[in-house]
Length: 317
Image (tube, rainbow, N blue to C red; front, side, top):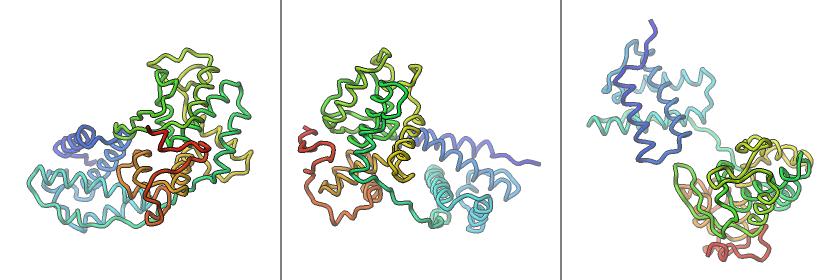
């Protein structure tokens, strides 16, 4: 007989996911990943114990069951990184449930996840990033597409935007202001200085775009006028890096890494760049750039490589 997750456990899971969305402000993609991890955990417990689970047994989990779950996931080929994420979701859910039920979840919460080596970001060199921005439109099918691709990658490198944030801009944005309000992960807003090079690139795209850029519609469009698919920017980056002889790590996201790393190497302050990137944790920014905070200057008054003598501090005013 195939065991399924108990109704009580399913209801608790859905309540927790609602909590993540409403109170913690987690992005929908993150919530979906946590939900998949938890469903896998609850289904494993049901199969492993041979019975569906009441809420108390989801909290008071013996070490043997946790180790069996981790061994099961490793046997399925789950990577240490993915298993660590799943275990983190399990702990988060269990802590939340234990608090609601007035119970103790110490045993599960003390379990350590598998160790894994974090992949350090590989930003482009300043010259590599500049070459990408200058030549990404060289093999575009039409001039307006060349202008579009140039505008997108300039926003990634010049403003440190995520690709989803750049493609989330609407026709109401141009002409771009000196400071742009960006809604990032989890709906969190931040203010991002817009360099003259980025404003110029977006203006050139707007002038060349053959479609009506309605204030309520996406700013960046595909060949037939629909929202631009991020895979098209990734493909343009791939063609460009192959043409320039850049490494495979030269992806759209690498331009965001490059933005942060180049500002830091120019003397920017880690906390200021944390705000620009929209990172919740300073440690995330530090790992993101691979730069030791002890080596950083305390004052954020550095020039961005694409800005010439234009001060980032002045752009934020």
